[in-house]
Amino acid sequence: MAFSPRSSLGPGAPPAEAVGGAASATVPDSAVRFAASSAEAVDAPLVVARGLVKRFGRFSAVDGVDFEITRGECFGFLGPNGAGKTSTMRMISCMSPVSGGTLRVLGMDPATDGTRIRARLGLVPQEDSLDLELTVLDNLIVYARYFDIPRAEARRRAVDLLEFAQLSERAHDRVEPLSGGMRRRLTIARALVSQPDLMILDEPTTGLDPQARHLLWDRLYRLKQQGVTLVVTTHYMEEAEQLCDRLVIMDKGRFAAHGTPRELIDRYSTREVVEMRFATAEEQAAALPLGEMAARLEVLPDRILLYTEDGDAILAEAQRRGCSPVSGFVRRSTLEDVFLRMTGRSLID
Image 1 (cartoon, helix red, strand yellow):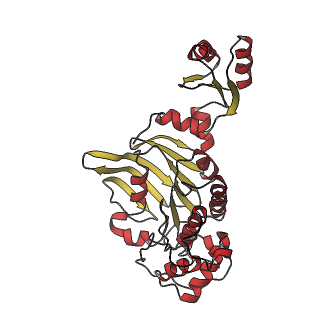
Image 2: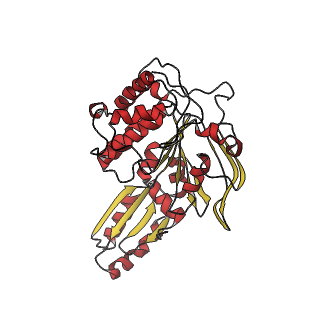
Image 3: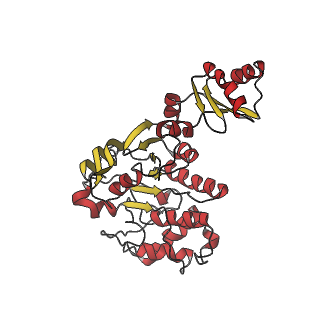
């Protein structure tokens, strides 16, 4: 069935604009058909921020950032706790007013058009807010009714979305006994029931086991392939590499880095990283001169990291010099290396 570009306001909140009309195709393609309205250019960015600021008293949670999110891409916000990710997402979602700068979402101003914007967003919050007493199918049907979608149409959409989310076999089960991964897939299906223009996902796979996480990545990747615009916050660097076309790394309210995952790795790291662990501090100290062969040396309490274009050459030289690490291996540089370099390794609460 073909969904028009409309969306939910978020968990449990009825929309300000009714969504109805018949549908005519099948999920997954139809569940995520995103078309520009007649008032919007097809290639126009869905979100544009210039000098965006969010203050709480004298504290600036977001401090003058610029970004654009284009139609059909997955855009990621990464950063440690307190970096400003959630504050930025809440402004995009029209849940928190802008303190300074300009923000346009779907071509509209959140300050004056918040109701219209929220009616076209699909929100997947960090914490699921499903009705545990209802069945899986009824969760979607009841949510669709908030948008004045006719009951027969709501049921058709719900059935197709459960197939997309791989939950058809659990359609008549209550939500309460579902696993965490199933609940997350159901929450994503619920956010799609009103055919949003923009999907906002706050840490969609937090707390899931690896199998559930990879299955959810597959569902999100399929949405992106079909033209869904996704905005994601995550603490999983592998998730950002898998899903995001572009991303920003936030730190203390500002953007520390931005670009595609590959661009960020190429710009701020090296092709390979050598990790070496030693039995004693003395043995580790004796290996530090190997840093002369690396682009960058990082000394940690339990190991040393050598950032280089040729990890095997460093391991060979370590052996030649008689270094005896407990373990030593070469791995490719990752987005996590970039993240830790830009934001530091100290814990922020």
